[in-house]
Amino acid sequence: MKGSCLLTEEGLQKDWGLRVEGNRISYVGPNDTIPAADGDTVVDATGCLISPGFVNGHNHMYGVLSHGITAEALVTEFSSFLEDYWWPYVENRVDQDLARLTAEWSCVEMIDSGITSFTDILEAPNSIPGALNAEAEEIEKAGLRAFLTFEACQRMGEEIGQLGLKENADFVRTHNKPDALVKGMMSVHTLFTGSEAYMRQAKSMADELGCDIHMHLSESVYEPDWVREHLHTTPVEFYDSIGFMDKNVFASQCVKVSDHELDIMAKRGARVITMPLSNCEVGGGFAPVTEMLERNMKVSIGTDGYINNYFEVMRGAFLMHKAKREDPQAMPAKTVYKMATSMGAEAMGLPDAGKLEAGCLADLITIDLDTPTPINEHNVYDQLILFRNPANVNDVMVNGTFLKRNKKLLTVDAERIKKELREKAARFWTGK
Image 1: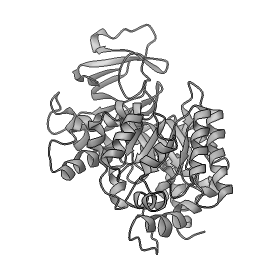
Image 2: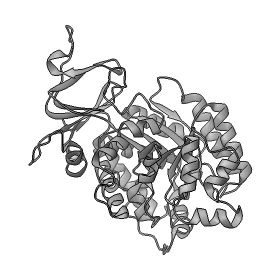
Image 3: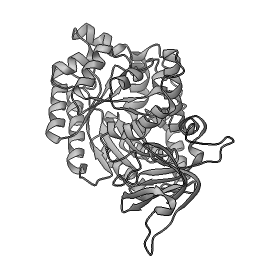
Image 4: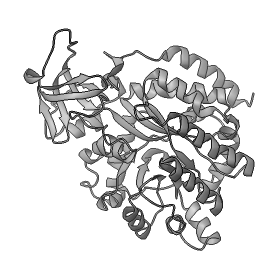
């Protein structure tokens, strides 16, 4: 593939391209030095920038069912968001068929937006057993790279709590092969929906399976206040006290965590996903992402299934922390881009993704350079994050295979999926 320019970890390289062999990048360098053999397909990406694909560290694919929904519930704070709206109107009503269909549509949105790998957390107690397998089938057809997990908890009783843990364990055992596109991990919800014994059990299962474990952590003041009242400590301190907090933890949200809690997480090597836009939706606040980065924590960016235009989410990360810290130099565009690519991939457990280097996975995108002002080595990150959109993503390749070519989706039928989802969402909204 020969482009007008290419982004490496060092920055913008003009008139560079790369060679793909199988599912890996075998060479990166100036266009006129790329080795070629008889029978090779040469992809002309003139007029485009070649970039690593974006990493969506946290998604809820079924979340599209809430886009535009009208609910009678009056949401006043985070607990009422869950108890009065999200659980009864959305999460509890998602069945396996809807889990499968929303996975299909989410693949459309993610490919279109330049996302090549993602982590999804299914919160749908009435869709298991078997929901993760149903989702995986559609994701494999679409060709995306993913980690799937079911968010296990005890809020609907012990039986469904154990079924959630089993859903994850069974999926990890069958899917976590070295070259698999879709793999699994363990996941629990929060400390206010799972007992200490339950959390210990989930972590023990993850350790035995050799996989990561995810949880929502302090998304608002609700969990820290609940933990302080019932467990007489803070969430991170509690997790640490039971041997849960370590390098295999993939913690999402982390909005209301203290400096001391961040110190513990950094010391233990926990990784984090931040969701800037959805944190605003639920009134959670602004996560201390700049403070995480100052501690050299690995931070990924997620859409949370809320606004799935990844460029908008990156813009949120870029802008919000400037406002929060009242510092226009906070959260540079280059840092946001790194969280969206190489750092995000490392946080998600994909150290050989998110960067264009020989030996890395061939997960990449091209973005058109048809901008009204020039893109150069000084402004490339600002131009990409602030002034590009999914419509500017020309090509998407995952594992050496094109999923989008010349702005046309190749592996998903967007119109068919959208029509079916619109019809089923209308019935879903009426409770039918």
